[in-house]
Length: 372
Image (cartoon, rainbow, N blue to C red; front, side, top):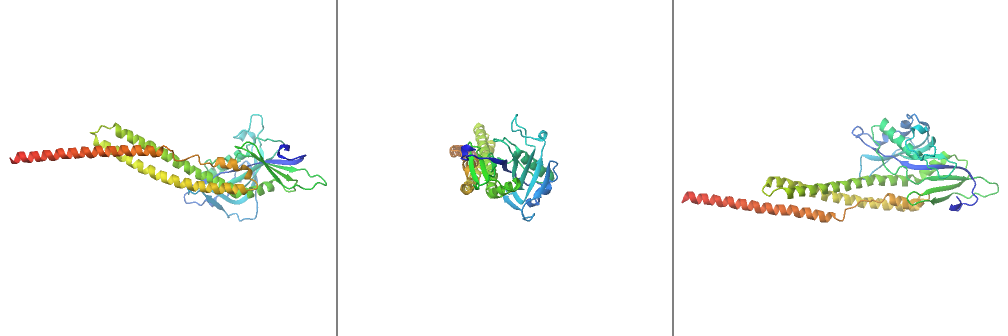
């Protein structure tokens, strides 16, 4: 760690930590069930690869904080009584392989508040390409769907890409303590965070738990943004689908012979309905995008003030970029389709007027012929 500024560092022990989360979503069976009914320690205690589940802190077990998405009222990230769990997962059961040459980490521990977690394991070298965060995430999601009536769909990135490394200075006599130093190093897309601490009598579990609690609020805000981004993508897809539907209606309208007025009417009515739908979707999308950008700005300002996460500002900013928006060509496309609809209405009006005039003329001719 010399390149980070640590000179003559002698390490007594170290561990790597991965931060992540899952979320839960209601199903038809759980529509009337409160999210807080999920007892994470009890649920995970049923898993054959999880042991030594221990509650942490003095909070009431039922003191749940449910962080719901701004737009998904059937989804939530649940925080409650903190706990720790030891995971023993033989390599044959691992779903994620770090590399062909690295042995999977079969023994690791987790501290969690429910949906949010920090998986950690001791290390002897750096870098360590561990997948303990991915393995625990999959175990947790599977157990939620097995033992509760809720679903737990994917929510990424989980764990987040940066790794956290805790390194403890070896205690040296007559050398003063230096306190905790925090460094960020690596690529913008996935930097690593190094915490160099004085040797401590506190165990890794306590330190991992303390770290999780310190970043807890910002981590919840990050994953709530990721939930809200799912809705933005849903709205964006709805606009694209409506645009394709309008194009199909316009194509059918143009391809229909002028004398098949009832069929043309049907295509025109469908097109007008689609136009109304897409304008509604655009209004909803712009409103939700504005709210998302406001929440994202508040989140990134909080990250700037976070002692442990401020070095990840660029990564978190990139990962919460909306990457969706109203296409610049959309107004022109809608204007084109509206003109197609107006053209049809004009043709229909002329045709109806011509038919009405012809019918009236025939009627008058018949009357005059009969009378005279």
